[in-house]
Length: 258
Image (tube, rainbow, N blue to C red; front, side):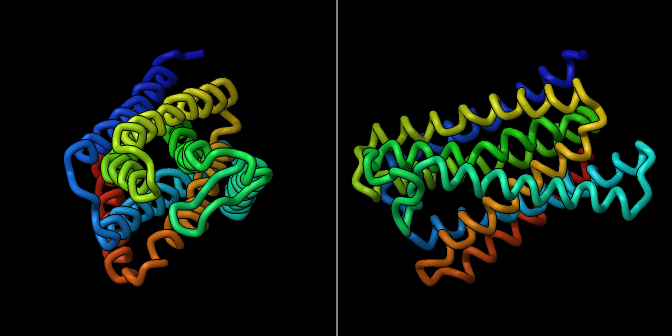
């Protein structure tokens, strides 16, 4: 097994974790962000993830399946099924893993028996895991492709880290605790990146499935978590504007580096 793509994926995941940690730093000094700004940042992250799902994961997965000998319909169906499996896996995790939305509150099995702080930790991990997996499998088609995907995710991790810390503070947690949890929330990304890269490199035939699976997991997070969270306070236009900017930025990164 070639270690170069695995190490590159690990570095890409570490860059995402570092960006998340860096994004939380202003929360140590800044006043509470207004809800409109938070929703705009949520929208920006959603746009990056949407573009990454399409341009960096689903389409390369279809192209890889065709390169391996599948016809257009078979390649599209293979990646389509993988997308649905990725979303289904997140549905299962969401039901089993207790977590708390920033606005609508606790959700998941036995969630009431856990402290709210840990519910937030689980929620953040549930959100960041697909990003780490996406970075890992993104290095399967090549280093340049993985760099584009990791760069886009790291960029959206900067405001995401700040939003996480500020949301925790708004929920009543201390400033230092909120920042510490926000910094730690990105650690799941390099772990997910190493797992994703290891699987697709050890088993190259699984690359189209892995790309589709990561795309489905990210699409689920965008539709089920981020967009609803950013649209509950009446700032739909700002959240949508952030989404559009994030989508275009990730598309440009994928075009430039991919």
